[in-house]
Image 1 (tube, rainbow, N blue to C red):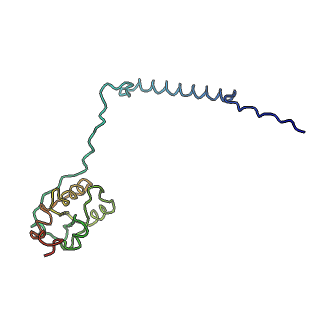
Image 2 (cartoon, rainbow, N blue to C red):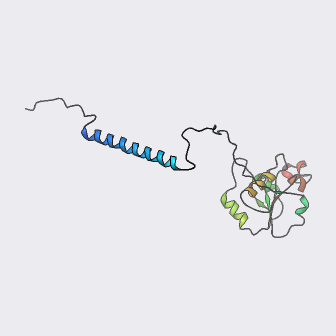
Image 3 (cartoon, rainbow, N blue to C red):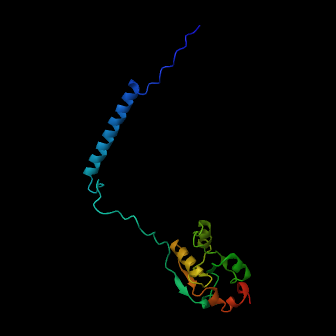
Length: 177
């Protein structure tokens, strides 16, 4: 018959583990010393104690570009190389929009998608004219500034938006006369 014995408690730190721990501490000390020495030899080394306060409240970079303010008559004089973009909501676009205009609704929270930017860039247009809802702030102006900030050139917006294009558009639901 076998004799029952209690299992021995696990060893927490045997000779192999102690050696590994000592080697890890030595390697860490060598790396730390080497990095301090390297930093000291550099002209623009990183300061161990920062002498000026850190700027933690920094404004976000402005991603909006400069655009031209246009009047509604630019639509009367446009040629085939002018791309007109409607920045209004889908429902307003469906009710009425400028002939041959591209619909690209402006969203204050979501940026323009790369595939939409590619469509504009590959359109071959020499000028991009954007119109919006004419409110304050105007969705057309905001979209135009976002497009210009994305690298698209010759972007302008129609001042007053749909209200400048169709002065009586606010008298009818959805801008329909």
